[in-house]
Amino acid sequence: MYMTEPTDLTVAPAYRSTMERLETLKHVTATEKEYWLAREIYPALGYTWEGFEGVIARAMDACSGVGILPENHFRHTSTMVVLGSGAKRNVVNYFLSRAACYLIAINGDPSKPEVAAAQAYFAVQTRRMEIRDQQEQALSEHQRRRELRSG
Image (cartoon, rainbow, N blue to C red; front, top):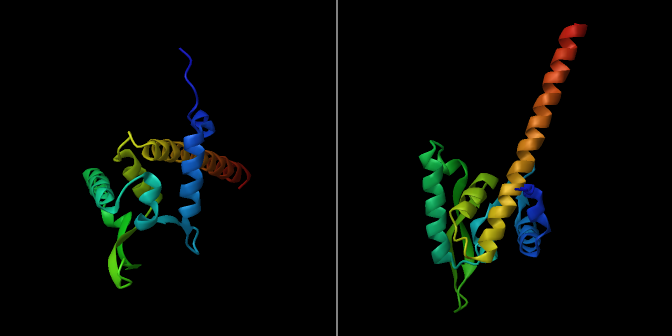
């Protein structure tokens, strides 16, 4: 049986659309750390905020379940929103790392096309980062050996 590569997912229209939305919503710090805001991505994943809070809770539980502090990936914050009456109110929000978004995607409802596409997006992006890390490690080891030989 022929198995396709994970990158084959990237040609699917639903994948492309979700990827573009998630990339548009991504923020980058001055130190080049990527993050997303929960209040910005929940509509892109087809959720109401109330439904999304349950997905966040399951993703945080998954993080805890492997011995990682959820606070390292799900940073609690608040956001000012304008209510229908025009009044303003602070509401719960989260800064989300790439790992948090990945856990949210895999703990989401795959019957939602947006969630299924996000699952594919984070799987592909995670694999790309793994490959990049392996290449960087191999290059570093190669440079270290070369320095030992010449040193």
